[in-house]
Length: 544
Image (cartoon, rainbow, N blue to C red):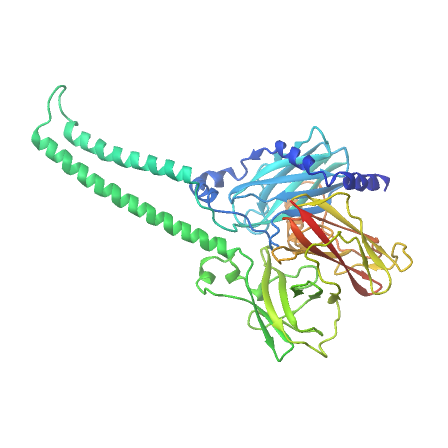
């Protein structure tokens, strides 16, 4: 326990020092994982390098944050998704203990073929300035539900953990003009050279030394050059067409992984139906990973529910509902709404597909006032309060609760910076200001947090284990257990399966996360006390 307290105290003292993270980037060593696949797809990789940017499972929050145990070792993991797919992901790992000797990392699919056949892992570089900090670079060669498996070696034995990493392309980028000019020049040089080479072969190919080509030979050479020029022109035209087709196909794949639009419909004035908007029926036949192919009838439970629905009142963000619709016929979810004031609402609906890829359906809806709505029950919750200020004078750190208690954000000193991994720590107090003793698990966890940017461009549903989906985490850890069970001989590695919270819960709740971009944010922190779900709300300004 003293070691854990010292660890968290040290992290709070250093986590806002962005220069530490920037200095650590010098330790990145891109490694050629999936080499066979990489060689086979080298041509496609060249195209993708100029076309793709990644998309995260959450809206506008691409990086993955995780905190958990790899056997006897506790790790804080940040996965910086690559700027291109295929591309190099930057893996940052901080160990709680100082005696970790080595960490090896390897990427693989989360489920399906290849999920239990990892390639040779790569050794993460240990920082000379901070021996508890490790960093590695891994090639991620495909979009979809992946995982990064980490093998930790130290005096307490070996430990292993897998972190789900959803990856995909977000948008295309134009080719740099300098590279365009260079490639065009080389292409013209090759094309003209091919024409003249063919002409020289026909004109002088079998002449004796010093013999002058006849007029007939020169005529045949000119005809051959003309035919060759036509053939080269046709090949260039076909090549351009092929490039256009592939670029269009890649753009469709980029669109596939954008947050799917939610088709929202209000029935009988109070029942909300949620479907996946399908503007292009052909997409269902072209890529089973696309939002258009996403089957709401096939989603898997994520910490106890098939869908987590968030309604946020716009534009003030002065009310939020966390609800759990039921699956219905016709590829839809539906629920009877509780009492709601009239207004425009932003909708975020989290689901996880059978492969472990998390999706967030996004939409807005105008609602009239709903009175005598369905009472909240089970895990459903709500909050209403003051609006988010456009430029708050100071970040809020104390949020009152309905029973007189408080949730206190133990905010690190200094400015909050975009792109810096942090551990957000919240202390729950009773009405007398003492640590709450009536904390209970909320959907199997100590708490839930939602990070929302004022313009709705960022939405992240985070748990004490991090920004990863709990359903995906279970798939990853379950795959490790299956691999160990199928291996011959005794299992040599201790693995940490994701366990739900049982019994009393600590009054201090932590969430690993990092703001993806600067701006104004509202944080909703949800906990459960004595059977009541309570929400604390905090505002934060994040600078570049």
